[in-house]
Length: 116
Length: 113
Picture 1 (cartoon, rainbow over the protein chains, first blue to last red):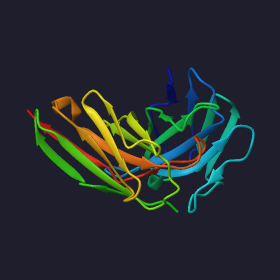
Picture 2 (cartoon, chains in turn orange, cyan):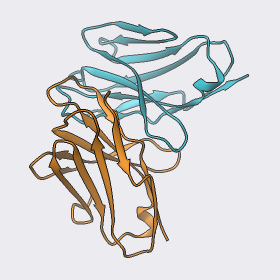
Picture 3 (tube, helix red, strand yellow):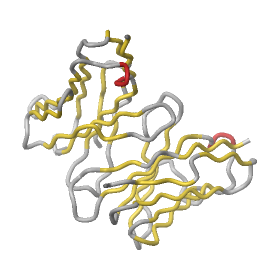
């Protein structure tokens, strides 16, 4: 149980295009999902907290108009990187907490974004 | 806000030896401390966690200890195997599952056969 999936696993796009990444909790419902970014050989940095049915909460320094987050259901959150640039190339990882359960966060497998 | 320090950044051990990774946290209100293992190109995988009402927890070869007074917690891996080689992250959070985790910088563990 407690499986989180992400799609796509990797994507290569041209500079200026938008990329959508999906995060799904497969066997549980999650009112809250988190989006992290990880650069090579670095730790995970929280980008935003995604709450079902409400606006996401962004961390300081993360542009909400560039990283659009939608959490339309209890099992799906999406992150859209708009007008992507090479500096947006990174490993994007989501996590989800089971509804009304413990503190445990389950992470997705990550999405490798490369912007040319 | 919370700040989590993790040491060492790299650790090499011989197969069969033990490995210990230590973390400290700054916010005394933090009450949940998970450890994650991340293999290259994959997402973090929860390997063990501990809550502030417990001082020690063990799961086969893996154990975690927590010292609330000193605000530090440690991961212990015994009888290490080559497949234990990965990057390990400690983290801390407070309140509930809706609170984001604050991660340490990670420890790259290499188990030498």
